[in-house]
Length: 506
Image 1 (cartoon, rainbow, N blue to C red):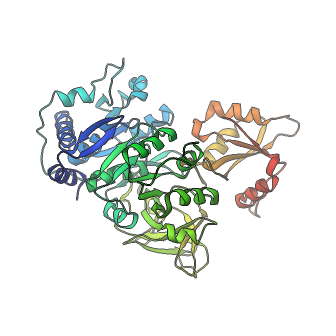
Image 2: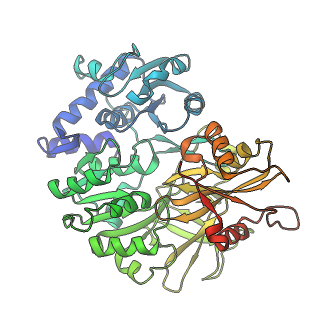
C-alpha cells in the first residue's frame, strides 16, 4: 500500500485512536488524516504535482510527519535533509535535489534568505515562523478546506546519506519493507511506539512511518532526552521503539534506569552500529526477549535480524543475525565469486526493499550493483549456524552516534594545517558513540604541534559531529607496497597504545 492509502484506511478503522502524541498533545487518526488532506490542498495550490521534489529541513515535529504523507499523497517526493549539518551543505543538498519547495523548521529559519533563491517556494514548518516573514504551513493548513487531487499517491522518498564523495547524496527509495519489518521485528497495530530518532534520517523516517502504516500510535519526541524517555515509557506504558546503540548507552547511563519499570516494552529494535558486550548484558537484563538487533542501509533496506535468543549465544563480536524475511543474501569476493562458509566477503542482498537508485547519479548507482544484488561495501561472514557477522566496511566510513562520517573528508580538512604532514581518521570502539572518530596525526618535525591545536583547527573547519574526539600522534603510519595506508593495522596500533591517546572534550 502507499503511505496515504494506509493512513486513509487507518483513519476509517480507528478514527478516535491516537495517531501522534507530541509534547503531551494528541492527534487522533481522523484529525491527523484531515490535516494531511489540508496540506495536500495547500501544496497543490502552489503547483506541487507528481514528480516534484520537496526539501524538508526541520527538527522533529508533527507537521513534518504530515508532510511525509501529504507530499507522497500527491505523488511528489519528500527530500528530508539533516538539520544538523552546515547551512552551506544544506544549500548544496537542496540544489542537488532540484527542490521545487523547501520547508524549514524553526531551528533553520534564521537562514531562510539562503534558500529563497534556490526554490520556487520556501515555507516555515513548525509552531512559529519567527521573524523570517515566511508563510507558516500550520496557518495555511488551518485556513484551507481539504480538497486534494486524487489518485496520485506514491511511496518515493529521497533519503540523504553520506557516501564516497563526503557530500550527502540522495538515495531514492519507493520500497521500505514495512510488512517485513513488522513480521521479523514484532511491531504491531496496537503498539504505543516511541519515536525518538531524528525523522530526517533514514532510520528515523522508516520507524516513524511504520507505526502509522500499521495503525499504531507514534509518540514523537522533539529530541532524545534519556531521563524524559524513561519516565514516558513508565507513565504511558509504551510497547515498542527503535533506538541507536548510542541512545541505548545514554539510557542505561541514567541513574533511574535500574529502578524504572520498563516491562511494557515488548519490541526494542536497535541497529546502526555495534552494541558492545556490557551494553548487551544490561539491555538483556532489563528488556529480555524484547531486544533485537538488525542490519540495514538506505540502499539495501533491512537485510538481517538478530533475536534475543541468538544474541545470548553470541555476545562477543558484531553478530547481526539471519537474513530478513524475503531477503536473498550472499557474500562475494572481489572477483564476484561467492565465498565459502566462514570466510569474509562483501554483503550483497536482493529483496523488494532495495532502493531505486541515487538521484541524478547513474554511475554511482551502478557501483552498488552486483548483477541484481545491492551492496554498500559492508563486509561479513556467515557461521555454521547461518548467522551473519558484520566485520567491517570496504568504504572508509565512520558511524559516529549513528551518523555516517566520511573519514577522508576529515583527513583532508586537518591536512590543511601547516604543521600536519599527514592526518588519517579511524573508527575506535566507544560505548557512547558506537564508533569514536580518532585522528592519527603525523606532525611536521620540530613543529611542537599539540592535540589542543588539532582540536581548535577542526572546530573551525568541520561540523561538530565530524570533529575528532581522540587525537593520536605517530612518527609514521603503516602502508602497503603501493603506499596505501593500512587502517586496520593503524587501528590495532592505536588500541595497543591505550593510555597514550588523548580524548577531547568537544
